[in-house]
Structures are given as C-alpha cells and as structure tokens.
Length: 581
Image (cartoon, rainbow, N blue to C red; front, side):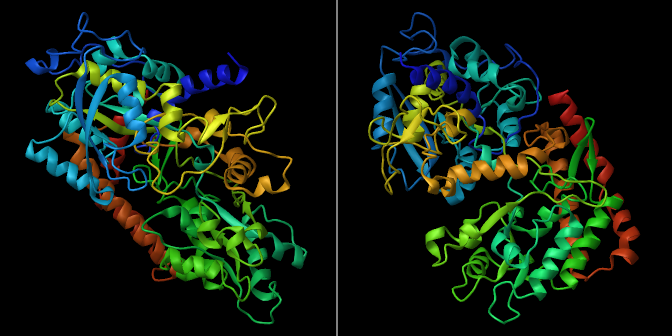
C-alpha cells in the first residue's frame, strides 16, 4: 500500500465521524457524554423491524464494515432534498455504484430544497413517509418529538451490533456521541462530518491594504487605531479621485446572516458576541451560561459603534442594504470606494479578482479581531465538524439492520471520497509523493477538475460523509505557483490560521447541539425568540440613535426581567449540564 493510501485510510477513518456530524445542521465540538445509553434505544418492537432479509445473525448480513452488506437484495426508500446540481438520485452514477457495492436497492424521492422542512412535516403528519429521511432540515427538537413517539427508531443497539465506521467516528470525536444523544439516552439521528477549517470563524472584516499603504498607515490592531484609520479613509481621499465618495466601513443585512453585519465583528472587541440562533448573546463562563447583552461591556460596545455611525465612519445602510447592493458598492467600476467590509467571504462584496479590472479582491486582506479598551478580542467559533440531525430511520423500515449498515458505509474512506469528490481518476487522484496540501503538510489527494454543472457522479452535500479537516486540507496545492496563495481554499485557510484561529475561545462557546426534552422545548423556543428579538431590535435602535443609550439603558436592562431572562438561562443551563457535564 502506498504512503498516500495509508494516510488517506487513517484520515478518512477519523474524518468520517466528523463529516457525519457536520454537514446537515450546525453542530458543536465541545466535549460531550462518552457513550449512548446501551439498550435504551432498541429498535421498534413491532414485527417488521425484525423480519425479512437483513434482520440479524444468520440472515445473510455481512460482518460490520464489510461489503456487500447483504447476500439477498433488499430495497429501502429514502427522501432527500432536490439537489438540482446532482440530478435524480434514481439515475445518479454514485447511487448506482453504491447499490452495486452494497447489494441494497434504494428508491429515492425528493422534496424541494427551499421548502424541505415544510414538506417533511407534512409527510410525517400524513403517516406516509419512507424508511429513511436524509438532510431534510430536521432538528434536535424533531428527534426528541418523533423519537419519543417511536416514529424515529432509536439507533443505539443497531450501532452497537452493526456499526463499524461510525464507531470509529465516535472514538475520534471528543463530543460524540454526546452531541447526538437525546435526553432519554437514545440516538435518533446520525450526523454529517464536514470539518472545513476556514468556516470555524465567519465574523470577519476585510480592509483595503492599498489605501493603508497610500496613506502611510499601519494595519489597526485596537479599536482606537481602527477609529483613526476610518477617519483617514473618510477625509484623505485614499482612492485619489478628488471626490468624497469613500465609504470607510460597510456591510449588509443578508437574511439574518449576521456575519455580514459590521456590528458582529466590532462587538467582539467588547464582549464575546455570538449571533448563531441557539447561542445568540450567550457565553460560557467556567461552565455557567451567561447573557452578555445587558452588561456594561456590551453597553460600551454600543457606544463605540454608535460613534462610528454618527461620524460617518460606518455606513448606516449596512443594516438594511441587500447582498446585491453590497456587491455593487464593492465592485464599483469607477473607483474603489469601500475601506473595510464585513463579510465571511471577500467575494461576497468584492467579487473574485477576475470580476474587476483592477483585480480588486487582491487589494484587501482579512482584519484580525480588534483589541478593545478592556482587552476583549474574540473570534467566536461559528461552525464545527459535526452536523446533527442529518439522517433518521423511521418506523416504516422493515430492515433496520440493513439500513444502518448501509448508512454506516457512507462514513468509510472509499465511499466518502466517491460520494463527496467524485470518481477517482476523473474528478480526483491520490496526490504524488512529496506534494503539499493546503496546510503545507503532505498532500493526500489532488483535484483533477471541478464538477461540471449538474454532473451526476456524486452526492456531495446531500449524503453524509466523513470529510475531516485533515482530508479537506490535504488537497494538493502547488505553492511554487505564486498565484496559488490567491486561490479560494488556500487563501481562506491562510487568513483563518493567521487572523482568527489565534483568537478563538472554545471554552466560551455555548454548544449549538443542545437537546431539550419535549416538555422544555416549546417554552425554551418561545423565550429565545422574544429575548433575541428584543435584544437585536434594541441593538439597532441604540447604534442608530433611535434610542438613547445613556438615558434608556436601565429601562432596557429591566425589560429582560419581564421577558423572563432568568427562566430562559435556567433552561439552557439545565440542558447543557445534562448533556455536556
């Protein structure tokens, strides 16, 4: 076996568990409970679950981890979102390849990707649903609801008896299986692992280094230095056209995608400021869940951002303009007019280097979190390797053992590469000895070509897999080519490693994957919605001057008591302790 084969084998074994947990919904990489509740999650006791081909020892099933899965052909049914770039899975080259490999035929149906959750809810309500639901927007709350109703089968004993690759994932991921274990001790869904290093930190800002050089300014590292740089961008005509058309800092409001909002980047110089749905305005303090939007440090951040807006240094339309309008500003054909833009990805407002005549995207560099007056300087982790609630097995499945073995195989190295990267020798190949990956460690694989439109050779981003960070960063990169550092993945790796990774504080992160009991779930969701809505509306009102920060601060803070903030924090703390302590 070649060195690359050995490396690929070990990397994919570790990566499978990661990709199983990361691709379908946002997960968390904090340490979790160590093992599922053995036996408490046995499959439905109804007859079909233990009858027919593939139903246990002596039924023609292969040993765990071996192919084909069964000697006697078995048919399963699966619903997936309609991925137009992949074509119908009934005609897809990957699914045909996997059918031949497993001896399991699958009948696929699809639902519109944009309304997949709504369609799945209707299917479940009707009672007419397939054996497996894959990547259709299910949540941990759905797992608890339908799991306790026996609509979703518990996978614990099935994994114990038939799992192979998923067990490797559990061993390699510190937060598994805790991050996918419901309050009753059962595992109702398998994860997706997709550990993209550059998506760990998406609250980014990009600064025009050409303007800095022209004005003789250093890259700002503190909030005070940043203020002075923005003043210079506004007043000293850095684009040289003799017009006062420079916008010192801007961003956009993209469907509540808060990584585009300038205040998300800026507020992390004052408090730990996370804006993900289940952790917005929250931090962990030695294991205690705390709310940050009523603190003195948060107030100081509001005053700073308001100052930038009132002095014309931060564009107030950042709170309302669309992504398209933002892109038009960044790619303005007449002149560069944006000094600093907030966005997870530079091309969202600058385009790619080929999109502007002056290759504008290469004139901007990522800006590290700024150190605030009290030393705060945070880069919250906004994505982790484990995507929860990716695949569930319903009580319609007559062959649960076969189904779990079929799903387990998706986490193998061979199947992960085939499903996510395409055909070896056509889409990719093993990297030559001595070549380097994106992280400048020995490369694992070499992309031969990009996918072509609706190329039906793979099942990327729909089927779970095990794409570890090592695997993704193991893509061969030719660093002897000076342009390599400007290509997408290498540049994203570099800016993450230099500007954001050093400032992450995982001990402050409230996990994205926290399970609530059926009794807790509705009340928790109600409180979260009303508290986060009030906090966000107040934030905008304060920084735009529609509310007076100094005069109204006390009444603002008192309102959280009326909104039952202590009760909300109590729910989160209880669920966190139950799952992660």
